[in-house]
Amino acid sequence: MESAELEAVVTQANEALAAIQEAHGRSNVPEARIRFPRGFILPAATYQSGLPRLGTKVQRSNASYALQAIDVLRWVCVRTDLSGVALSMIIKEAICVIGAICEWLTKEATRGDGARRSYTRRTQKLVDRGAITKELKAEVDWIWDVRCNEHLHEVQSLELSMYSRRDYNRALDAFKALKSALIEVYGKAGA
Image 1 (cartoon, helix red, strand yellow):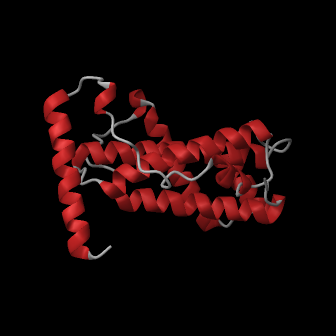
Image 2: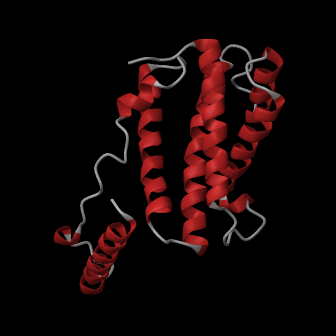
């Protein structure tokens, strides 16, 4: 699609969405629901087959569903002009989901040898084994620090515009690196 054509389509979509919003506001009106673009959310099987061979099939399935939720959050980040605190909180949620998946992976990777320890001790165990680098540990520990901000009673600073698209990309890159490192050790889950 050429740039001018894309701009015209975006303008039409914006006008249509604005009309729906103006007519129905925050009301839950089934007829006012728009169709989520097909193809952006990858199939769960695609995500599941790309995970390390860790945990149970049920756990890998649930992790793949969480990755689909991240696709939805990503769509909001890349296809809207959302900004400010709303964008920051969407990004935080995506990082928190990534953190939950990293938590599961580190628990399974250290099962029988420290899985009940704290997250940072588990990541240190993975460094000690040579499964991940110190640099990757620092990145996945950062994800966990953000993930711990889910507990609002522990957050000591305002989160107004605290998280950016750069943070989302950083978390996603670290997750992909952790996944790849663990595939090297445990193999790929496959279908």
